[in-house]
Image 1 (cartoon, rainbow, N blue to C red):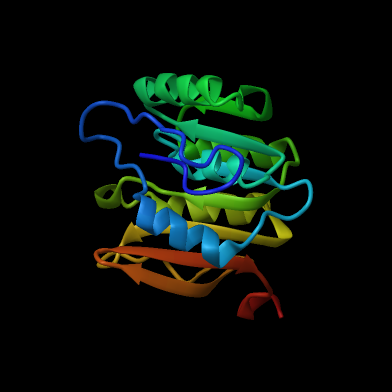
Image 2: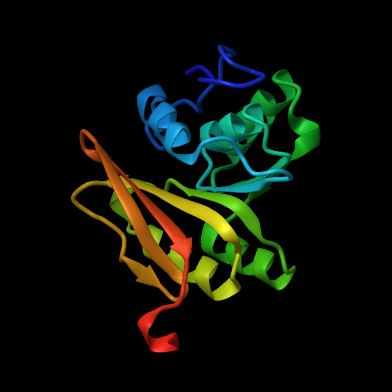
Length: 189
């Protein structure tokens, strides 16, 4: 895999060996960042279920100020740290090993918020909705921010999680990207 655009365009990103990690392909990543556009000034991104870190690294390459990565697999975190070191991005990143939902709850307790949040959970595990609920409860998405879930088209996440509301959905073969923004849910109006 290669970084699609930005200051590290064309540089290689290694992925952990095996089939546990499924990195976001170049075509889907390019489409995602075309939709998002450039990161807002001072953007901090959260890449949950990070694997090799392709989404967060792409955001850093395109100008995000900082990125926070989390994955429960130690092997994936080792490869991610190596990618960040080799690309000279380690000083702008945090890498955490552990459960994504619990990590989101911890970040909420610290009062953190993010311009962009990327969720790319294992497709068959059904983890997207639990992570979305934790993010919504913790108000981790900045008011003008965007959250993107990469998922199998046959298993979309719920359209609403508290203040997180589905804003768009794009399909790329069997992969879909569902975009969320903050808003007022019906029960809070």
